[in-house]
Image (tube, rainbow over all chains, first blue to last red; front, side, top):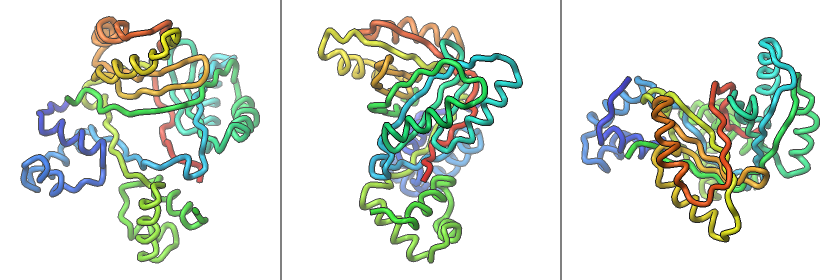
Length: 152
Length: 151
C-alpha cells in the first residue's frame, strides 16, 4: 500500500475536481516543479489510487431527468442464478451501476431514465423480467454530492 | 440543441474521457476542427461540465464500503439541512444523496477495516442529528460501474 504525504493528498483533491489538469498547472498551484508534480502523478496512477475518469455531464440538459436507485432482492438464491442475473442486468443500457450488497437487498442498481414514464418502461420491461428478481424498492434521486473523502 | 453528431461525440467521449481529441474525432467520424468546435460549444452550454478523477479507495487501504440508508425525523423542518451539514463534516463520508421514497438520505462511508468502520459508525454517524432510522448495506462487489448515459 502506498503512503501519501500532504502534497500527494493535495494532488488527489485537485484531480478529483478536474482530471484534465496538467502537471505544469497543478505544480504551479502547489509550488512544485512540473517534473516533480508529474513524478508524483505517475506514482499515484501506478499505485492504482487514481481510478477511472468520469465525464461530468448535465443530465437534465441531455434529456435524462430521472435517476432512480433500486434495491433488488433475488427470489431464488444459488450461484447460477446470481451470475445470470448479473450478466442480464449489466446489459441494460439504462442501468449505470450494479453493486452486490449484503443486507436488506442483494443488489443496488442506479438507473437513469428520461422521465418517470420512461423509468416505468425500463422497470417493467427490463428489470422486473430479469431472471430471479424478487422484491424491488425504488428511491428517486433528488440531489447528489461527492465528497473528497479522507484526504484532508 | 443537441444533434446526432453531438450525441455520438459524447458517447465516444464518455467511454474513454482521457483519449486525445484526434482519436475522438476519428471514432465519432468528425473532422478534427469540427470536433474541437463542438466540444467547446457543449462546454459553453454547460452540457459538458468537466472531468473528474475518481479515487480507488482500496488502493489507499480503505477496504470497507458501507451504504447507510437513513430516514430522518422530519418533525423538525430544518432536519435535512442540519443533518446534511453535519454529514459533510465526516471525512469518511464520500457520497451524500437525498431521495424521494422510503429512504431520505444515503451516505456512502468508507473505512480501513471493520473495527475502524465500527468506530466511525459509533462516534461520527450515530451522533449525527435528526436520525430516525438507519439501515446498512455492505458493499460486497461492484459488478458494473459505468455511469455512462445511453445516448
